[in-house]
Amino acid sequence: MFLDFYGLREQPFGVTPDPTYLYLSRTHHEALAALLEGVKADRGFMALIAEPGMGKTTLLYRLMEEVQDSARTVFLFQTQCDSREFFRYILSELGIKTPRMGLVSMHKKLNDLLLSEMLAGKRFVIIVDEAQNLEGPVLETIRLLSDFETPHAKLLEIVLAGQPQLAAKLAQPGLSQLRQRIAILRCLEPLNAQETACYIEHRLKVAGYSGDLLFAPDALSLIAAQSQGIPREINNICFNALSLGEAKGCQMISGEIVQEVLAITVDSIVLQSRTRVSSAAATPVRTSPLFPDGPTFELAQEINDLIASRAYELFESGGFTHGHAREDWLHAESEILLKVPVDVTETETELTVRADVPGFGEKDLEVRIAPRSLCILGRRQETSDQKEGKTVYSERRSKQIFRMLDLPSEIDPDGVYARVSDGLLEIKVSKIGLGEKVRVVVRAATA
Image (cartoon, rainbow, N blue to C red; front, side, top):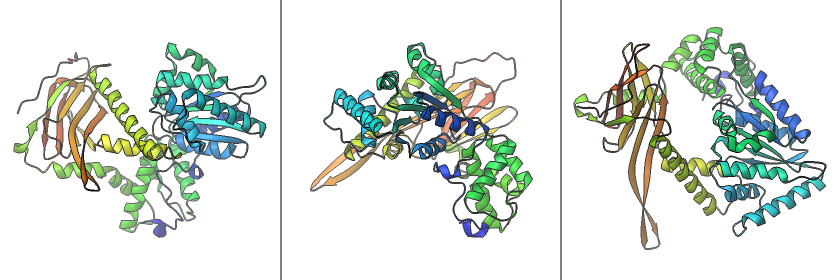
């Protein structure tokens, strides 16, 4: 690894939400300060909104660090649940086993804990990450938690954090009572070019770097532009740039190195290697229209429900051990949903989308098209055998693909050709000129 080569004590661009590496941009600083003040002032409900990769979870971890001496905190990541499961997750995080408890009993147990913490002079903070996945009834249950109070003080503070869909959900008329109770609302914005440079410098310093300028100005400009100020993207680019820089023996990361990193990604390598197969072996794949609020979005909810159900099975089989909600969810997701590397290239007249779909044939796949987006769907059965004593159990699980893509240009849904060969799905779509009427009927591609 490049640590010794660049004189680093540890990896500066990791993917875990380590609060030590939190860089306080303007909006990150404002959000953290507002949430801290909200906890201290017993404001009740607070909300944090951010696009994926903006460092939301890292900021929440810093918040927990800041209040750990004066408050007891519960951090929940598992949000695919009903109201009963939500209470169970809370109590599990507090080390309380709940297999035989009903909702009323869990409600009473939490109330007793809150009173105990108040008498001990401590606040109680519940932080719910990825709250955009919470269903309406669970959000209503969370609203009712605000009834835990005395005539003089709130017994707990609640921070709802999530992607912009959370704001849209809170804006629904049926959740007006919850929305009215949110005393503090903050959003995280992408870093500008100057903040991006400071972000990189900050992480290098925390990781122990003390040498001369490591990233050249032209490299920093490229990173800022390509990442669009999203911290997760900055981390990925910087990590790969340092790896390539060490391989080339470069003490400074130049713009040329960053350009090379941007041109060579894992996804593109996999996809390019698969494009070498003979086009004669390719088989057409079904295509159909993608309508808002249509069956595609019902399928998305169905897949989410499957993952949530499997995550709960893992949680239950683990004896309701707290602290593993995120691992259970990711494990369940990996069992059900296949990660699909995708590469999109654009010419003046068409877009080409290539997706790595190993093991899927034309009968397993479907492509749904809209004027500015497409969705790749796939399903196939997997069978695994497990032996217990002398008995062999066969288990069948569905491996699914659900990959929604926003397209860089408006397309003609009639000009679509999709085919699959040797695990590579290739979709070619014709672009349309500005002002042309968009048609939404798509027919199956022909060989």
